[in-house]
Image (cartoon, rainbow, N blue to C red; front, side, top):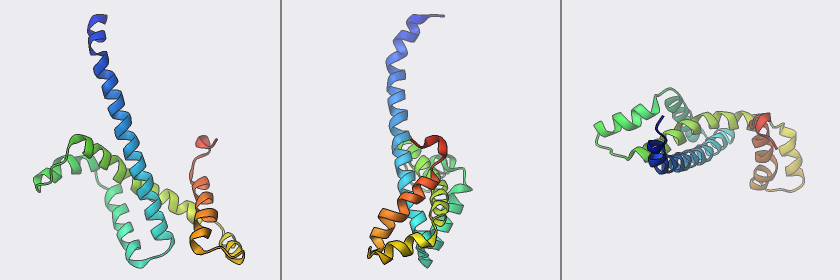
Length: 147
């Protein structure tokens, strides 16, 4: 094994690691944001948004996304970089799965929590932000990730 060759390419491996972490982090952040937004839209039972979110979830959970983004979009004239394709792929696919995860977490919260918070005089946004969402996120996160 020639260690001089490995030593020569070590900076490129370091750059690749940093690029992978950046793309992965931004993709996961996009997935979290999309997942929470979609779960909230379904939880609040807004008819038009429920249908849009349902279509988004079905489309992106049942499509080989990177193939679609990287090969199909250029055929219709949309050109994106490989880095953007990776971020969008991770974000859109992860968002569809996280939407279902957070939706189930929101449905897991008993209605008495909402009623109790409202009886204390909290506004709907406060009820959701301080009472419902923290419990939903806690019940959606696997036990191995809890601190």
